[in-house]
Length: 382
Image 1 (cartoon, rainbow, N blue to C red):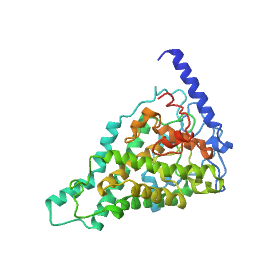
Image 2: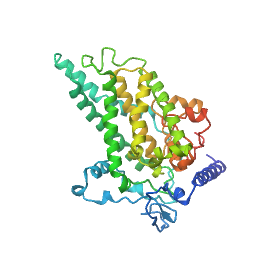
Image 3: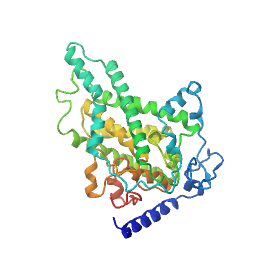
Image 4: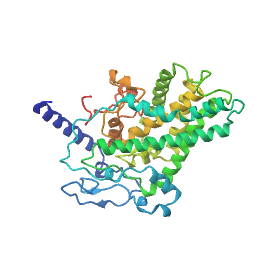
């Protein structure tokens, strides 16, 4: 890259970042917190020249108080302990020095990420298949199978969080020189813990409710067909359509903003904050929309369970903020028609606040079709 080209790129990035910062309707939005009736008084922050130990380069940090993580684990409530399991390393909650130079935004390998997903997502299917081979007369009842698949799904989610956290430390996060990643607010701990539990239980239950048959071996007997990757892509684009309609409506129709407002109390989220929501949003995103997509796109039990693993991976990736051109592991081919979704797209959505843009969570298909796609900043030109 020539010096002239680099200078032009730096100028473009700076102007686009300033454009995003100006989208907020108040200083509280620019500072990193969408103010609502429950917001606390702002906390003064004195920026230091090195950028070490501070959370924002703005004069004040308006984000809600978060202190539960400072408690000894023995004194945490069950909800606090659960939320603390998925917290990010402390370094991600500090602004990075302006002098830091991480170089060009790297591109993540979709082959490596799909291998990671396969290695973890197939665990309960392999265990059940081995059991059926070793004990052919014993078939897993719904209760036994659900327990194994639920625990495996939880283990998969924890592995994804740890992977995202590791890459955030290694590669950095978007906008890290201006503001750090958000912590889970104290006032949101109980709601977040409830949402995590509901997500895990329902998303694992959906394949059982629609398709489980204890007589079928989860790896054979047509349990996973050759067309599964194509149907999984169709499922995700279908899911994204219904999500787009609800999501855009909740932003643009004032009377519906209450459904989604709490989720936007984070402007620089982490993987665990993907599920930060209140009751109405939880019902729509955890249950209703995935069920509609599952009824429209046919899948077997094994396929739908695996599909849920790929989906939670993408949802947590999109909220991680990891500084990388990180393509969707299934819908990566949409890049060739400029409809692919990368981490920065949803990261910018949170920075825009109620003003919107980038409503899709699996792709930019519907954003591009309906003119709600925003230009990227640090991934500009990819």
